[in-house]
Length: 121
Image (cartoon, rainbow, N blue to C red; front, top):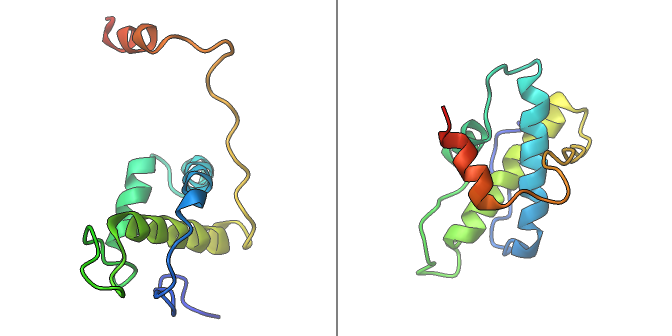
């Protein structure tokens, strides 16, 4: 079995950035699952931090100065994708994470009303 935390063997391919929203939903779904048992208190921010801090997974640099160096967007995309895939292998038998249920009501609450509820005591 391959080590789940090793970098992609071929990082010269550009990341399909139009799939980023799906990978972010996968990350949220994985965090929802992990915090219910394996990693209590784990947050999306913890997952993002962990994804970008794994050694040798991705070098996040900003706009590429050479063709082999990923852009910031590609680097973040690759880090999230690698993290989601590693967590799926380790904690979900290699299956995709089911996307989370909607947490907001319909019709949606106005953002101004939502923000004011955070500051009420």
